[in-house]
Amino acid sequence: MSKSNILFIINPISGGKDKQKIPALIDAHLDREQFNPNFAFTEYAGHAAEIAEEAANKNFDIIVAVGGDGTINEVASKVMQAQKVLGVLPFGSGNGLARFLKIPMNTVKAIQVINTGVVQVIDTGTFNNKSFFNMAGMGFDARISSVFAGHKTRGLSGYAKLALKEATSYRAQTYHIYIDGKEYVRRAFVISLANSSQYGNNAHIAPTASVTDGLLDVCIVNAFPLYKLPVLAYEMMMAKTDRSNIVEIIKGKQIRIVRGMEDAIHIDGEPFFMGKEIEAGIIPLSLNIITPKYEA
Image (cartoon, rainbow, N blue to C red; front, side, top):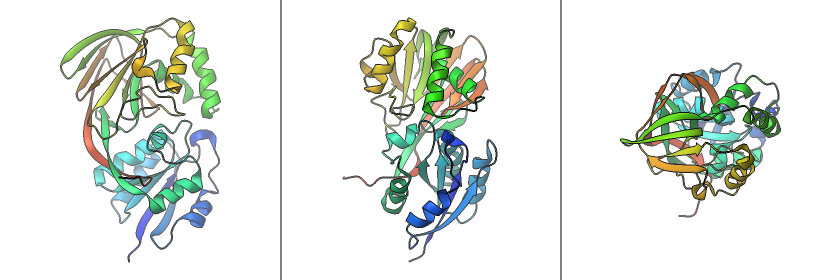
């Protein structure tokens, strides 16, 4: 039986965790009867996409993102285009997509998923022609992503401290949101377009989201007094935002959002700057990804 060529693309700074020993760990636990492993470390933003594109054009069957949702995004965008297979070893601050797909946070167990898992085909979101696989959005979370990117401190605690600090000064904005042709005008704190259910760290903004339903969940966090922030946090951690008085969730395929000015947005947690109008949509069943074996 021929072996599959597999490339592990390792982001050395994601999640603030050291990854120099990852190749040795993979060597020790990867099924060498199935796979020929290769390794590459990223050196700058966008490098993972470059490595993935080059690998996809060669004879690599499986390309594994070793990092967080941002690293996954870079690699998966190229894997999807080449119709290869994506693997994930979660090493981010939140690991939203990996958690949703039940890929273990334990690295050895995640390697075992690559050994024994199944290939599932999931949807891809689009956001002004950029692909996303977990979450994209604008408003307060995009502001935090933009500021967080410039901080040296990574991980959940650093993110939480920054979010609390910024929450006192951030103001909701008015958005015109068109979902499958119907207009909604909202003064919102956050607008998140969810492919999976959560941002990461089991903070669920869209509890009923599915990566295989051909729909995006448009999650509108309407303007609310700051004293209700603990209520929103509780609802997210308990996966109850679909019953919230603060969050409104509308499912759709074609989304257009018009806001008052150019501003920050985020795509799978990575900050960008975009104009007043955003076009978003869904490409059903477009990415092959290895997930834990499940009972039919």
